[in-house]
Image 1 (tube, rainbow, N blue to C red):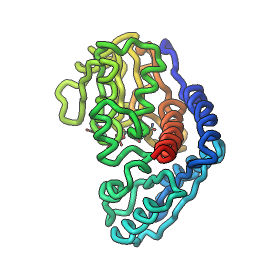
Image 2: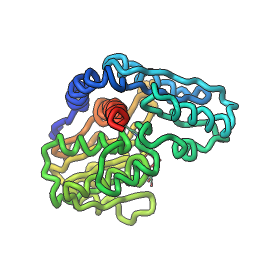
Image 3: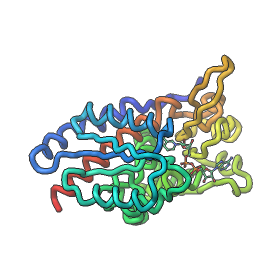
Length: 286
Ligand code: NAD
């Protein structure tokens, strides 16, 4: 392997260490408390709830999992969100996705008080991203940008490909990388000649949800590759495992590569904690 692996763990640890001091400062004014809303019992959503709870416990952030039955209506859900908006002891709200099909997750997220939207998905917080403001930006895009910054690669003017244009990863990441002056190309399912775009890039960020999509011959030798993808696949031994969106052979060509697992995902989890503390601090000042 020629690429240097850019691990998420030390970056996540650094963020958490900084948060501990801030949490102590908020103890007497606005102690952070995160409420996660889970509708039904999706296994993935439950897994994220457990890991959020662990992170909150480690940092001394209050955590409550609000488990609701899967036949809860949109109107009932809106009442729950209203109550959480009104509850002064709750400083952060997150809707665990996916939600059952009869619910409109986007409308529920829009009903949250933006100052408690620690997932960074409310239009007001996404609007701030357009302004170049990272306050309460989507956690995964914050993590991807933080990985690029931590790599030490010169971002100014760098040819950068963002592969994926989702609201929570691709679009906000592209916008946030304009702040340090990256030259961004956003690729997606309708892009013509995706390998050609990637080959010109000094920085490639991939958030497609397509295992092994990015091949070694798409990558400029020495480039930084940030793999955001998290895909559960069956390994050769028949056991399920987590892989990214990047073919393992990319490690032979890239200069720096973020591993999956152990890369962006760990930093995303730390960013949720950071947003939770930021939201509480903003409420303390309001
Ligand atoms: P999404 O499905 O909402 O968006 C995927 C985007 O990739 C779309 O814009 C689509 O156009 C593009 N795309 C998909 N397949 C493509 C292909 N073959 N060629 C070109 N473009 C393609 O997904 P998302 O929510 O943005 O998540 C993307 C990936 O990131 C998933 O694997 C998800 O599990 C992972 N993810 C990771 C973290 C983390 O913390 N590391 C957090 C959130 C999501």
